[in-house]
Length: 119
Length: 446
Image (cartoon, rainbow over all chains, first blue to last red; front, side, top):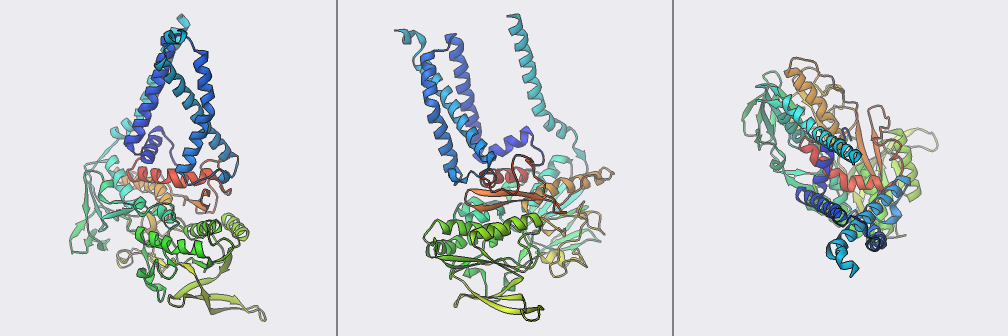
């Protein structure tokens, strides 16, 4: 890469997914993040019960993310050839895990606000 | 609370600064457009011509930019290897020439037939004359299929014959032939021509891919591969050549140096090579004819400059005289006699790099020298011969090899992605990120 600027990176990602899908995914990620922040502010507390379910879902998110990336790229786990490959895989798994946890927590909070939970 | 407010204000300020920084390069580029009425003609709308046309539109205000190319389709050539191994469909490679060209560029859908560098005119196949102040030669190269006796393109896909360079359709037909081989096994033969060539890694990649797929398919344990080349090494960069030699050794690929493919007999499935062999008694080298049978053969023909370059007197007079690559300074890519003519891409008569990665590094250099000349200054950018080759060694792994004229390795991600290691991340770059980067380059954005 000659110049790895923000605009170059955006251009590259737009080409990978297509402009429409890339910005749709960005929007979706932004909406989920905003919803997450919204429920945190609204509830003014982290519900440990919901957090527990979010944590339980993390390994599922990690596995789903890794399987998705491998399937999309004609690859298998046996192709990890060096430390950098392991880091990339772990990074993908981590992103999947965190994404899933946020999604699960936010989903629970939106569907079952604290008022309902205490009933 | 006060602390929180102040930190929030800092955060917002930081956010605004980041936002401003993100827009700044675009703003500056717009502000510094050079006003000119220069007449710029580009021959060839492949990777180099298209990327350059987009850069010119972004840098110049008022220039007349004309691009001459008869080809209706744009081919993403780095993907040919993937199609020829059944990993991507043919459509993956094809788009239209027009969709990449910016507004304000005139496309003449004709072949350029002649250049008169003294009168500064280009003549098209129909006889149309186009004047220029600056000429950028990016016509690509010609595959000389006729140089292989007995071979013609209509044979690709039949009798176990493959030839992936010829285009998307032939890459798909190559896989049609290769897919039988990876199921049934037998003897595989792969060649490399004696001339300079596009992406010198491609013959090796195809060999590696067919070996990997065959080793996991019906042919497992029932095939043998032969790699032939007229050279005495597998790759022009010694450290890479050694690595590939070791990998071929591990995979059981037999290497035949100083073998030059001359003819094929499709009916008998026999390839004939002109080979230099050493007489065991006298130790002297002699040229002899060697026959090799095949169940699958991958043919790469000799490659030369198009007639428009050779016949317009723009080729080197003393280098590559059988191939006709355009004379140019290897640092600035400017023609030694005609200061308003530049070479870009495959046509450039420089020691290394007929790849899309070379184009990516060459375009900003020619852009700098051409725009500087318009501004009455000297350009400063120098092309160091940088090129890169994501050397696929199996489905799912590659080596990200980057180097320059001096055979130095130039890893972009030094200390993170080792150039001579077979890595999954390097495969990801080839499989996922490369086309995206290439397309961004075509649009003049990367």
